[in-house]
Length: 452
Image 1: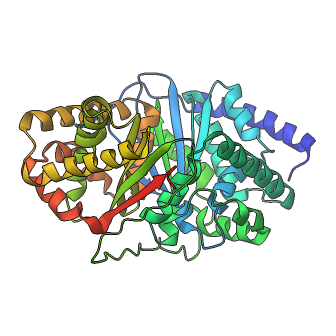
Image 2: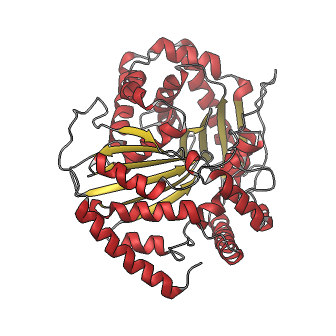
Image 3: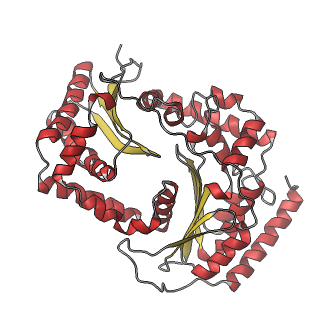
């Protein structure tokens, strides 16, 4: 790690360099090609080291979003390494060859920018939005930690202690947090897909420096990453900047493919119930879908909206407004690489109401088996989905994350222009067929909480 004096010199040099680059590479003011049905254009290319680069020009405001995602989520951890991906995400802010601890944050914030990072089962994601004339600053920072992250015993110990303390605070403040972790382990019974971000915390405490170095060396490499830049940029000049900062970073060696899920459908229902002490009575219910056939993902997403999105969706209307069996209900579709799951979390006043709520959910799903959804109800769900879909694409950050997610999911980006239409073409018969095929007892898991 550089000395403090050296870091201050690097900081001054960086600011000067950024201003010079900004003067040499002014932002574009117009887009040359007409927008597609997504409402924006983009293009992609790869560097010699395998880094996938996606660029999208948006000149409405003089700002830019830079996102870098690595295929380095929790799915890549081995048993006993729970929390490794999360630990490394946080170590990415603890300094590199030319940047001191937390200086990445300081540089971005001092020019009026904002930044964040997150780790999911699929990926580790880092992004910042800042004035477009500081694009070179963001690229320099991201490239420096991609090629020369400072992983030291002191940084590991400090970061680990901070994360474990935060985890204990969350456990103390949320009486249901442990139930979510247990539910995931039941719904996704294979280890790579089913363990949580930090595990129990004990595993993170046992991680060694060599564990961290090996994970970083394997997965935090250009050919396992996507760089997406969206904003007021000149495409040709941005390509030059990207090549300048990233092209010399060596590629990885023998990046393992993500593990395939192991999910055996038993003859009998896979319904697992465990009593968990909590502040109230409730349950988790989920359906796991793997493997989905071609096109079925569109039906599943629209079903999520029919059942759970909006106050008049079927489950919210039934449990919260009509039957009044639940005092709280949430749920969503979750995707972990090729595995999808529809999850519901419900809180009730007593065990009787919890049982009635479970039966009501299954009843609403059974109705979908035999009674086709009316075109009016389906159109309403599609309109809500379309609004959410387009709202996501209305911001530079939303577009960047949309493109990154598609790239890491293996979706051909040239097919994205028709993705929205694929969802909007879902028909009542397609929904009926999906429910009959996939909403079966073998795919269902229930975890009751607060019940003894």
